[in-house]
Image 1 (cartoon, rainbow, N blue to C red):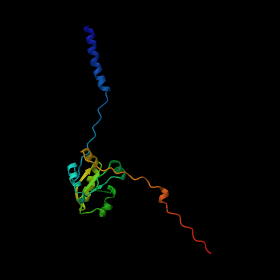
Image 2: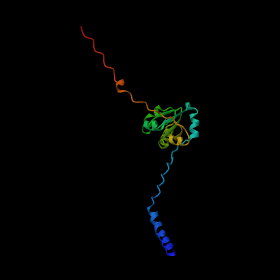
Image 3: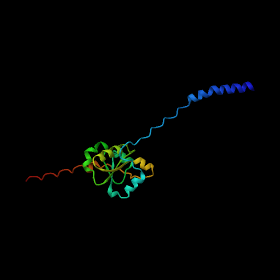
Image 4: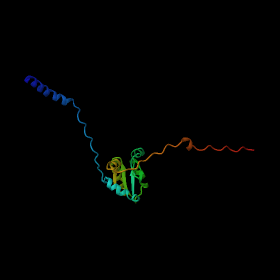
Length: 164
Protein backbone atom coordinates (compact mmCIF):
# COMPACT_ATOMS: atom_id res chain seq x y z
CA UNK A 1 0.00 0.00 0.00
CA UNK A 2 2.80 2.34 0.94
CA UNK A 3 4.70 1.53 -2.23
CA UNK A 4 1.57 2.14 -4.36
CA UNK A 5 0.98 5.51 -2.67
CA UNK A 6 4.61 6.51 -3.27
CA UNK A 7 4.40 5.56 -6.94
CA UNK A 8 1.13 7.46 -7.31
CA UNK A 9 2.60 10.62 -5.76
CA UNK A 10 5.76 10.26 -7.80
CA UNK A 11 3.84 9.90 -11.08
CA UNK A 12 1.66 12.92 -10.18
CA UNK A 13 4.78 14.98 -9.53
CA UNK A 14 6.15 14.17 -13.00
CA UNK A 15 2.79 14.57 -14.75
CA UNK A 16 2.05 18.09 -13.43
CA UNK A 17 4.84 19.85 -15.38
CA UNK A 18 3.93 17.91 -18.51
CA UNK A 19 0.27 18.96 -18.24
CA UNK A 20 1.25 22.56 -17.65
CA UNK A 21 3.34 22.54 -20.83
CA UNK A 22 0.54 21.14 -22.99
CA UNK A 23 -2.13 23.65 -21.93
CA UNK A 24 -2.72 26.45 -24.43
CA UNK A 25 -1.32 29.84 -23.46
CA UNK A 26 -3.84 32.49 -22.52
CA UNK A 27 -4.62 34.83 -25.41
CA UNK A 28 -2.88 38.16 -25.18
CA UNK A 29 -5.12 41.03 -24.21
CA UNK A 30 -5.90 43.45 -27.05
CA UNK A 31 -4.50 46.87 -26.32
CA UNK A 32 -7.26 49.37 -25.68
CA UNK A 33 -7.60 52.35 -28.01
CA UNK A 34 -6.21 55.44 -26.37
CA UNK A 35 -7.97 58.65 -27.37
CA UNK A 36 -5.15 61.17 -27.73
CA UNK A 37 -6.57 64.34 -29.30
CA UNK A 38 -7.08 67.94 -28.15
CA UNK A 39 -10.83 67.79 -28.80
CA UNK A 40 -12.74 66.03 -26.01
CA UNK A 41 -14.33 62.66 -26.67
CA UNK A 42 -18.05 62.98 -25.91
CA UNK A 43 -20.10 60.36 -24.10
CA UNK A 44 -23.80 59.58 -24.19
CA UNK A 45 -25.08 62.26 -21.77
CA UNK A 46 -23.35 65.08 -23.65
CA UNK A 47 -24.49 63.76 -27.03
CA UNK A 48 -28.09 63.34 -25.88
CA UNK A 49 -28.07 66.92 -24.59
CA UNK A 50 -26.87 68.17 -28.00
CA UNK A 51 -29.48 66.08 -29.82
CA UNK A 52 -32.22 67.64 -27.66
CA UNK A 53 -31.84 70.79 -29.79
CA UNK A 54 -30.53 69.58 -33.16
CA UNK A 55 -30.98 72.96 -34.87
CA UNK A 56 -27.66 74.14 -33.41
CA UNK A 57 -25.49 71.07 -33.94
CA UNK A 58 -24.09 69.24 -36.94
CA UNK A 59 -22.65 65.76 -36.73
CA UNK A 60 -19.98 65.26 -39.38
CA UNK A 61 -19.74 61.54 -40.00
CA UNK A 62 -16.31 60.68 -41.37
CA UNK A 63 -17.03 57.06 -42.21
CA UNK A 64 -17.55 55.46 -45.59
CA UNK A 65 -21.19 55.19 -46.76
CA UNK A 66 -21.09 51.41 -46.31
CA UNK A 67 -20.07 51.85 -42.66
CA UNK A 68 -22.92 54.28 -42.09
CA UNK A 69 -25.51 52.00 -43.70
CA UNK A 70 -24.22 48.96 -41.82
CA UNK A 71 -23.79 50.54 -38.37
CA UNK A 72 -25.97 53.67 -38.40
CA UNK A 73 -25.37 57.31 -37.54
CA UNK A 74 -26.88 60.35 -35.83
CA UNK A 75 -30.02 62.07 -37.15
CA UNK A 76 -28.42 65.40 -38.15
CA UNK A 77 -25.29 64.51 -40.04
CA UNK A 78 -23.15 65.44 -42.99
CA UNK A 79 -21.05 62.68 -44.50
CA UNK A 80 -17.52 63.76 -45.44
CA UNK A 81 -14.84 61.12 -45.44
CA UNK A 82 -11.76 62.07 -43.48
CA UNK A 83 -9.51 62.18 -46.55
CA UNK A 84 -11.89 64.65 -48.24
CA UNK A 85 -12.38 66.93 -45.25
CA UNK A 86 -9.83 69.59 -46.19
CA UNK A 87 -11.25 70.16 -49.67
CA UNK A 88 -14.83 70.34 -48.33
CA UNK A 89 -14.46 72.79 -45.41
CA UNK A 90 -16.21 75.50 -47.43
CA UNK A 91 -19.44 73.46 -47.27
CA UNK A 92 -19.43 73.11 -43.47
CA UNK A 93 -21.46 75.77 -41.63
CA UNK A 94 -19.35 77.77 -39.17
CA UNK A 95 -22.37 78.93 -37.14
CA UNK A 96 -23.24 75.42 -35.90
CA UNK A 97 -21.62 73.41 -33.16
CA UNK A 98 -19.72 70.51 -34.72
CA UNK A 99 -19.44 66.94 -33.46
CA UNK A 100 -17.30 64.59 -35.52
CA UNK A 101 -18.22 60.90 -35.74
CA UNK A 102 -16.38 57.69 -36.53
CA UNK A 103 -16.73 54.12 -35.30
CA UNK A 104 -14.38 54.36 -32.30
CA UNK A 105 -13.54 58.11 -32.31
CA UNK A 106 -10.04 57.87 -33.84
CA UNK A 107 -10.92 59.46 -37.19
CA UNK A 108 -13.36 61.74 -35.37
CA UNK A 109 -10.67 63.06 -33.01
CA UNK A 110 -8.26 63.73 -35.86
CA UNK A 111 -10.91 65.57 -37.89
CA UNK A 112 -12.18 67.51 -34.87
CA UNK A 113 -8.70 68.84 -34.14
CA UNK A 114 -8.31 69.83 -37.81
CA UNK A 115 -11.66 71.67 -37.86
CA UNK A 116 -10.97 73.44 -34.55
CA UNK A 117 -7.64 74.68 -35.95
CA UNK A 118 -9.60 76.13 -38.90
CA UNK A 119 -12.01 78.17 -36.78
CA UNK A 120 -14.99 75.82 -36.46
CA UNK A 121 -16.96 75.54 -33.21
CA UNK A 122 -16.05 71.92 -32.49
CA UNK A 123 -17.79 70.59 -29.39
CA UNK A 124 -16.26 67.13 -29.45
CA UNK A 125 -15.74 63.80 -31.15
CA UNK A 126 -17.68 60.57 -30.71
CA UNK A 127 -17.39 56.92 -31.59
CA UNK A 128 -20.82 55.73 -32.71
CA UNK A 129 -20.16 52.24 -31.39
CA UNK A 130 -19.07 53.66 -28.02
CA UNK A 131 -22.31 55.67 -27.90
CA UNK A 132 -24.33 52.51 -28.56
CA UNK A 133 -22.32 50.59 -25.94
CA UNK A 134 -23.35 53.29 -23.44
CA UNK A 135 -27.03 52.67 -24.28
CA UNK A 136 -27.53 55.35 -26.93
CA UNK A 137 -29.55 54.74 -30.06
CA UNK A 138 -28.29 55.72 -33.48
CA UNK A 139 -30.30 55.87 -36.68
CA UNK A 140 -30.03 52.89 -38.99
CA UNK A 141 -29.79 54.00 -42.61
CA UNK A 142 -31.35 51.71 -45.19
CA UNK A 143 -29.73 51.99 -48.59
CA UNK A 144 -32.24 52.47 -51.41
CA UNK A 145 -32.57 49.66 -53.92
CA UNK A 146 -30.59 50.07 -57.13
CA UNK A 147 -32.37 51.89 -59.93
CA UNK A 148 -33.69 49.95 -62.87
CA UNK A 149 -31.22 50.50 -65.73
CA UNK A 150 -33.97 50.66 -68.34
CA UNK A 151 -35.87 53.36 -66.42
CA UNK A 152 -32.85 55.63 -66.23
CA UNK A 153 -31.94 55.33 -69.91
CA UNK A 154 -32.72 58.35 -72.09
CA UNK A 155 -35.90 58.01 -74.17
CA UNK A 156 -35.37 57.19 -77.83
CA UNK A 157 -35.47 60.17 -80.17
CA UNK A 158 -38.66 60.61 -82.14
CA UNK A 159 -38.30 59.81 -85.83
CA UNK A 160 -37.86 62.83 -88.09
CA UNK A 161 -40.93 63.74 -90.11
CA UNK A 162 -40.88 62.56 -93.74
CA UNK A 163 -40.17 65.19 -96.38
CA UNK A 164 -42.94 65.74 -98.95
